[in-house]
Length: 409
Image (tube, rainbow, N blue to C red; front, side, top):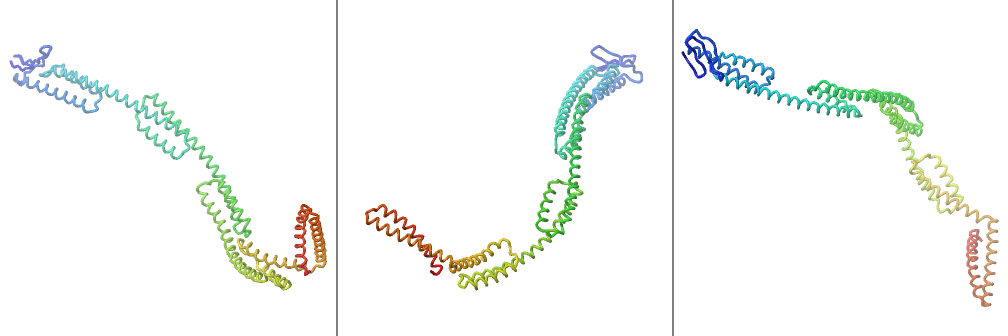
């Protein structure tokens, strides 16, 4: 008979293994010596040790599911419980029990992890829904649209929740996207209508601008072009494919008109500059007539200057008042000389002036006599009052005498 710390072989070839519950029959060995029998069943034990070790490693280091791990444990436990190996089978049972506890702990850990992931996914999806509902009210059509598309991709990358929660959140998310799309579609439909109306208005403005491009009615036409430009700006933008074409036509028509006007104005400015030079020469000629010594000759010379002046034409607007003022000053001087000559040679006016002078002289003489009388009587107050009246009459007399002298009197 052969024995081992964990088993023995009796004289009949029966192999036993020692356990906490006593010896258990492993099997019968008739093929060789008892030592070979023990060695064979010890190798089977070592095989179980290896398998359990591998399973422990898989449980610890891989994503082996709890279901598969427990199935493997049950399979190994059946082999251990079958007592077809020689070794410390009770230790293997303890390892298998520990492995069950490890698997259960891993399962609980994974269950908690899945719960955390589910809660994180819920919060992430709720955040996506809240942002989508906020974006649904936005008028930033491009940015909001791009952001909503990015949210969809983010949603796709998140794990699913329980069906009810996932469906509810997706319904809110999808509704927000649909609401935004509906608002954006309505906005661009309205925008398209506005742009179509702008196109019709601008085509009308272009037609009028082109019709005016060959006008030579410079002032009113330029004013109308300014009005057309204001109407153009107020019309808003047409569709992109029409806006640039219409603008080029509109601007081109204006350019034709204003280029023609500029050419005419440049010619006119040159002509008026030359006219100003000629009128300055005439103004100098007229100013040489002053002071007037020979009224008849001055009148004739000024008439000639004025006729040539009128024949010259317009001067630049900013020089008009200055140059005309010089000629008018000479004209006024000649008119004043004519008035003075008329007063000097008018008999009726001279007679009236002489009569007025005589009356004033008589009044002055009378007042002087009254003053002398008042002083002789010692009436100083009356004399002073009469003297003040005499000052006024004397001033009138001096003025009348001056006028009479102008008549040669």
